[in-house]
Length: 301
Image 1 (cartoon, rainbow, N blue to C red):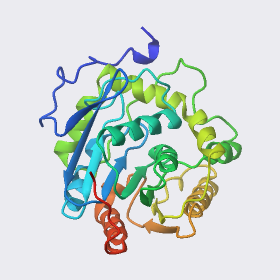
Image 2 (image 1 turned 180 degrees about the vertical axis):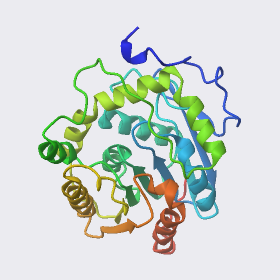
Image 3 (image 1 turned 180 degrees about the horizontal axis):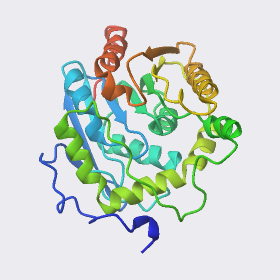
């Protein structure tokens, strides 16, 4: 067994069954399946994209806040949650391709809003290229930038991401602001071998994902709302102020992806804005829905 998988548990969530029954349905793709859960009503579809090692469970409170105004979908990327593994590389291009195939299989053709956190921003931006005719909004929550490694590593003077295939990682921190039952769901799934392997592969492919996004960068015509953290995560570190300045500059640059781009600062939040201030994220999404011209909503069938 690869050393990086030595501390992982069973591949089956049945061994570490979460306290809630699975919600949603399986979508069969090419040799694997993704679990997707769409709740609510409305011709507009909102799709949430978690960060590196993130979980669809993180979006449950927001899904409940928005389901009266739109069809709100969360899904487990391949290897996470109830979804099975994919044989494809875990880079932004392939992850976006799988999300696109999932939306096609579900026959989602109407207006689409993509909401992404952290590494999920790479996936959402690649998916936006494939769904440009549907896209009416792109919400990037403290997301990764294609130049962040280059800029921050130059400042730090050392590598920030592992190189090669042999490295050991710890499960991502679970946002403390999430409800306790949601935290427990995330914790139990994070112990499975397949989830660990998915996280390992996505982290190993991070540099390639950044390169893919950088090479395919284009301006979009729909609003791009960047919600960045307001809390300084680097204040106590050496060169902390410089790191914070770089991050804020890169977040501002993401808003330039659209002539309708803007930055919203979540003053009370760390990196997991959607957990720390879900009401703020909900307000941004409701504003996008309110600005949709009457009669523009296309049918979802």
